[in-house]
Length: 59
Image (cartoon, rainbow, N blue to C red; front, side, top):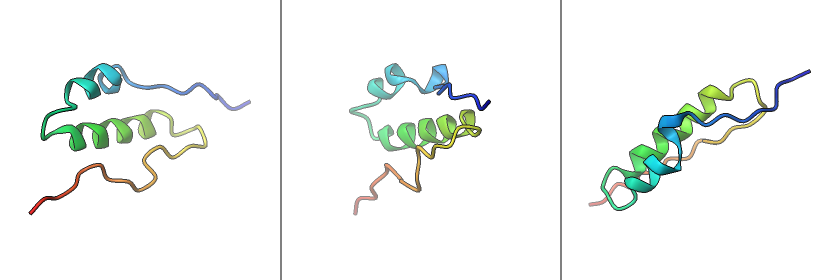
C-alpha cells in the first residue's frame, strides 16, 4: 500500500513563507518551498510545482 501522507518540511511551512511576504525574496522563498515539498513527497502522485516559477522579473 502506498503512503499517502503529505509532508511539508519545517523550514518550508507557512510561518517562513509569510514572514517573507513583503520582501523581494518572496518568489525565491516560495520556489524553494515548493521544490522541497515535491522532493519530500516524491512517492506520492503529486506535482506541487508543476513547472511554475513565482519570481517575476521586472525591468
